[in-house]
Structures are given as C-alpha cells and as structure tokens.
Image 1 (cartoon, helix red, strand yellow):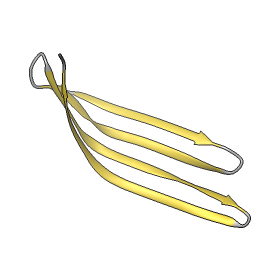
Image 2: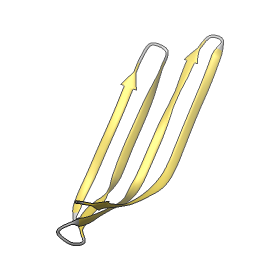
Image 3: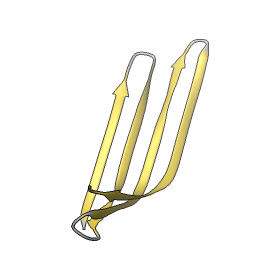
Amino acid sequence: MDLRIEGDAIVTPHGRAEDIFFGWTGCISDRVSMKLGYRFLEGGVDKDPVYNYAQFHHIVFGLMFRI
C-alpha cells in the first residue's frame, strides 16, 4: 500500500482553482489495484461584477484493471 498525494492548481488574475487528492493505492493482485481517498476541489473568481466560489469534498474509490 502506498500513500499518495496528488494536486493540480492554477492561478490567474481572474481567479484560481485547486484539485487535491489524499489517499492510498494498493495491489490486490498482479493485475488489479485499488485506490481509496479524499478529494478536495475548490476554486472561484472575484472580479467585478462577478463573484463565484465553489468547494467540493468527496470520497474516492477506484479499481484499476491491467489488461
């Protein structure tokens, strides 16, 4: 099992956005692995006359199959 932290971010004069994942990945067999974690997505814009901001928190579960 591996601890994984992944993130993407962008900042512009008009706003910003971040997407961050904290979780674990592990092999179930030599062809199947899984991912379990928490993902945080946040971003917005603050420019006259527009103000928009959003945050999303969710649990992530995934199975990956190698062919």
